[in-house]
Amino acid sequence: MLKSLPIGFLICPGRAGGGFVQSILDSHPEILMLPMELKFSINWEYLCEGRDLSLDEMVYVWTTKTKISNFKTGILYGVQSGTEKFSNCDIEQYKKSFKSLLKRDGLSKLNVFYALHEAYGITIGQDLNKIKVIIEFPGRATMLNQLAKDFQNSKFIEIVRDPRANFMSIKKQILNSNGNFVQRRRLGYSNLLIKAIKDLKLDYQQIERFSFVRKKEKWFRLKNEDLHSDYETTVSSLADWLKISFKPCLNESTLGGHPWLGNSSSGKPVQGKSLEVINRWKSEISFNEKKLIEYFFGKYIESYSYNCFGKNSFDMKTLFLPLKGELSIMKKTHKPKGVLMLYLWKLNPLIVITLRYILRLDKLLLSPIFYLQSRFWIITILIRKNHKNI
Image 1 (spheres, rainbow, N blue to C red):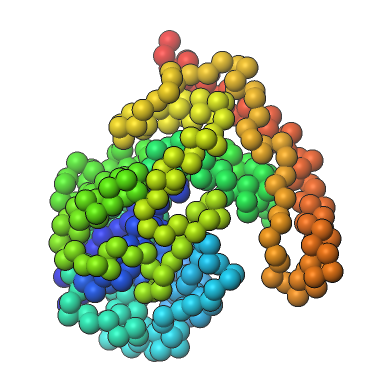
Image 2 (image 1 turned 60 degrees about the horizontal axis):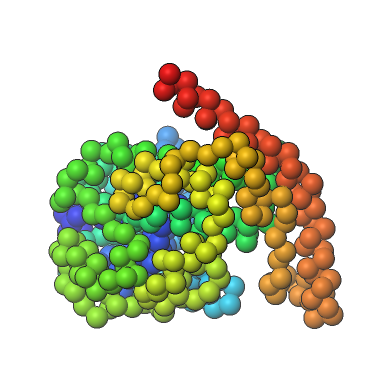
């Protein structure tokens, strides 16, 4: 029955608001959707492709190596992460249903996809006869062609946000979690500023080249700004496109049916629409950040009908101005979770804050080198672009 239904994929370059859209659709009785960004195709490629997994191995891989494991640890993330533990799905019962469905249908890629979703519906007691569409959240746009090839009945919801707002949210999230743009890796370090720009641009390029974008029945473009400024009209249009009923649950943000307070990079709860979400970046972005993003993403700013503040170019003086936070390290002042750090926090929070700073001192010392690396990378892009224009 489920295999005849359309599958809607939520495509969300960067931090455009995919989690918010998922939370709006989460409780609808005509939608079957796992309460997480599953990234099925990426996980299949990484965990299953080319491997002759047994039934038990397949169950183990998907319930322990992917976000399905959150059914055990808690599905809430963002503002409620670490403060509120909730799951609407018993992981052991889910495993039994998942295994039973795979035993019935087989271990092919499509069978695993449908079994993952059907097992969820069975475990939470959802009426599968009412389902009109399956929604999956792959996030990034890197697997569009593969998704269209694997799922003949696929359709796509693209969540759009002004690239400048998107970048500022990505940047803030990086600084909050990592301190600055220097990321430790198993062997050495990597530059998160370069990665953030490359990843966002790649997603926009993949969407631009994807043939379904020009098919209205296959592609729905939803602007984050429209959700916050004209919520009812925007959500009603989405419901019509998905061919589901407009129900009161579409006016609520939930995960697994539980109220969800969002994943804002500001760390503040967001319940439903908020004009502050639309405009926050305008007061946070610096002049050189604005020029940098408009240079790299000016084409997409215009194609998505946002307004550029100036020409998509910048001089060397602007280029070499450091971004906010690029040559510093953001202090972590939140209450820790670990037993030892929690004990030290009770003695004096300043002890923990100082220890965190010391443990990230290498990132601070390396930040000037990574700043120069970023500028050389940008200059290389400039030279290549100028060379093409000659």
